[in-house]
Image (cartoon, rainbow, N blue to C red; front, side, top):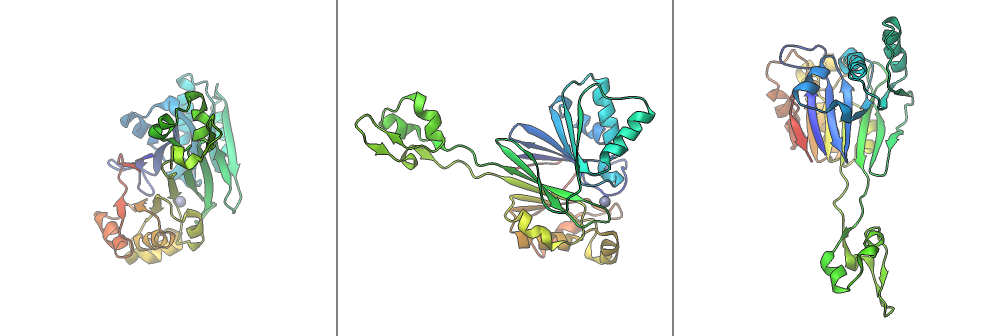
Length: 301
Ligand SMILES: [Zn+2]
């Protein structure tokens, strides 16, 4: 998986920082996650191919997470897009976007498909043979979901030396990779474990923004390889985090520790802080493997 942060600050776009947006490359998909104002420029700057974007996941309807979307939808029309675009987001997102299109009499000439969410239970919202995306209901001032992106278990890997040793014909490789045992012409059964190697373990990425401290997500994101958790404030401003239903760096780190994730990425920093290194210092008192998001930064895992 390859995660690129396009924006990781709260509230407003500024000269050198952008509101929330990310792009996740997973098994040949290019998923956009949240889409704050100005993200289209970030896509251009980071040379992300517009034509590869087919699914956009919006956590909630605060402007710093979706105000860029009408612009992108319009650009796709101007570029002559004909492929489907799927928008996954809270109920109301269709009304918000289509109102703007109606007022401007500027309908898309490509299929624009909305998948509106309103459940407070986790649900699978995208699935194919390689990938599964599940919602992570969060605790914010309005209805909000995080998203868990999970690779599915891939096929077993052929142990070439083993299949050659038994002179197994290539036509059987497919079913062996799917886990079948093999019977030699003399009737001897070769167990699959002798012919294949374990595939790499499937990876997972949990995206959690925006939310107050919310322990109910721990079982949902348990053992994720990477967790992005918002940390809008430091503990010194915990009075603000509790009233606005955001988290502090310490709270994000506590969730990471309880869930036993591989790595914690902090983001959604309030623009009041001049030195965001302090977020890392505060989080590392609770959980070791912490990195700070930064606009343009890439994480591969
Ligand atoms: Zn918000």
